[in-house]
Image (cartoon, rainbow, N blue to C red; front, top):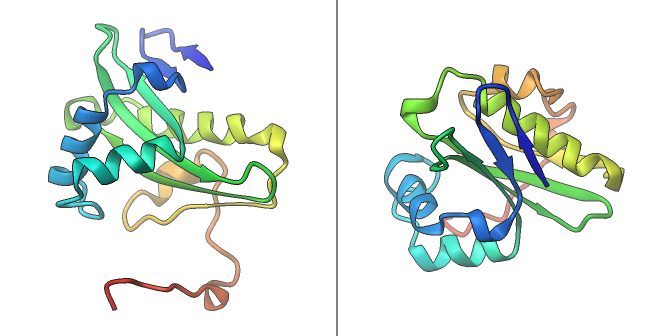
Length: 143
């Protein structure tokens, strides 16, 4: 899938257009949830996921998101990142909406994400707070 905005930004799910080295740099050095993540882990996660890359008008990658899904009942949107110099242009909302639209044909029961500070961005794409957070549990390897 490839979609282009009027301002020249292009969103693609083509794995050949994904700059894994750049994604690794972003996640391991600037994304609080993934600081120190190894290049090998980023690559393995990308291979096992549906990846969304946003490229700027000059063709360089400027944003990323990945979705872990069984394409039948569940998906998890994660590792959403927009390069600092491209923030404030609606790319995060566009990216979240593109993920939503890409997953719609699968008629998944639930698409989950976690965020500490971007609730408004995801709300614009239709995400709402989890109705029963007390029902969620985690097996945390850091515990």
